[in-house]
Amino acid sequence: MIVGKMAKDEADDLLPDKDAAKGFYAKYEPKEILGRGISSTVRRCIEKETGVQYAAKIIDISNEPNDGADDHTMKDATIQEIHILRRVAGHSYIIELHDVFESSTFIFLIFELCKNGELFDYLTSVVTLSEKKTRYIMRQVLEGVQHIHNQSIVHRDLKPENILLDDNLNVKITDFGFARCLKPGEKLFDLCGTPGYLAPEVLKCNMFENAEGYEYEVDIWACGVIMFTLLVGCPPFWHRKQMIMLRNIMEGKYSFTSPEWTDITEAPKDLIRKLLVVDPKKRISIKDALEHSFFQTVLWDQDIAPLKRSLSSNSRRLSRISQLALELKARSFNARKRFQLAIICVRAVVRIKRLHTTPETMSANVARTDPYRIKLLRKVIDGCAFRVYGHWVKKGEGQNRAALFENTPKTELKHLYVTNLSR
Ligand code: ADP
Ligand code: MG
Image (cartoon, rainbow, N blue to C red; front, side, top):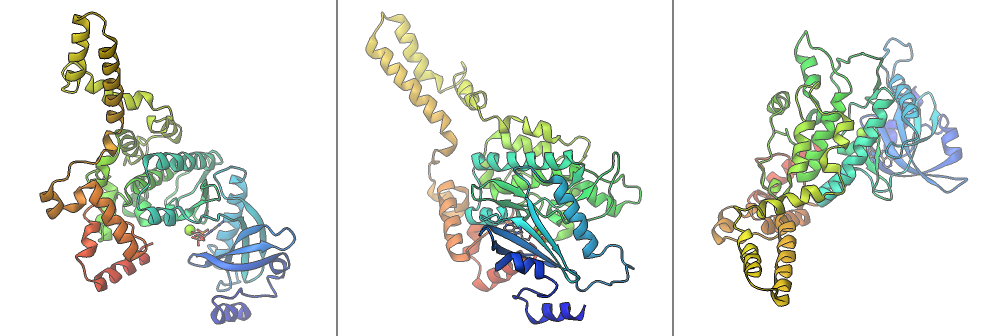
């Protein structure tokens, strides 16, 4: 025990307990740290024989009592995590466990390496994801979660930090540290996960004696939180006072009012509304979520809706086209006019399709009083904020990235510190 403890205290950045971890060292060459958890460190490593790179999650179990008095030890939890990882293995969007080494002081879990790191870091580097990218990521996340649930496992800690991206920017769901295997009809009651992603029914278990418990639907709720966050770069329920955030979650209180939402179509909003339903029984199933119009790649029906609207008889947009059409009808066939009409129609369709990407007309007054409302300026502000602060995830609706420039650097450093702490 003492040997392990000393090794940990003395060398935070060195690999611990060389004797006990012989098997690992014989086979792998450890490299730099990729990430850290509460009692684990993840390092890149190279398999000596093959030269293939992996990620080694090294879990410290040296501080635990050996008398078996505590039956919720890190070791037990890790053994359960390994059991679950093996059960969910074999799916494209779930992390693959390659090897395991166990000593009295450390457990080594060797995973396939995800070179592109966390979805969280990807999001902070790009601020927000387009609908197309969100569709690509969310389809994979939902398919991965569907596979997990099909093995009677509930993950309980889905969040962008636990979704990794491989070489091809494909999703790998990881960190099954809180995952549980459910018997048919079994409910869970313990409060675990990450505050911003907790489903209302999990919070209820902690607040009311007669709470019903929760099961698989908590992961679907977390998918709603993730999808919202990907699209606009800020989580739906965040509030700097955690009590208010928890109350917002309990009431399902969030909105699509921040400026970023104006550029986003109805389909993703509709899906988020169905994922973030407070009553787990009324929440959309993963199967139905995957069949939602947001995921239909042939978007013709959906995209044509604005066109249909603009071509309806009471639309102003119809006027020029119908005028020409009527003129044509009235006169004899005129190839030039017919060609002109065809061009106008095509241009109209293209303009309507691009409507949400067309820059809005800039009002000097709005630019002066509320620059963040103007998409073009918003992009410039975001870009500048990035260059200054390295990364930025907007935490709540009330926050305005333009305000970053109104604050003193000291306040901002404090803010970033709080942001990091709350991760
Ligand atoms: P914890 O349970 O301590 O949160 P995780 O399994 O989530 O541990 O790993 C912690 C961090 O290590 C991850 O968020 C990620 O940044 C990094 N990481 C974990 N596994 C891998 C992997 N296979 N490839 C690349 N990075 C990884
Ligand atoms: Mg984690």
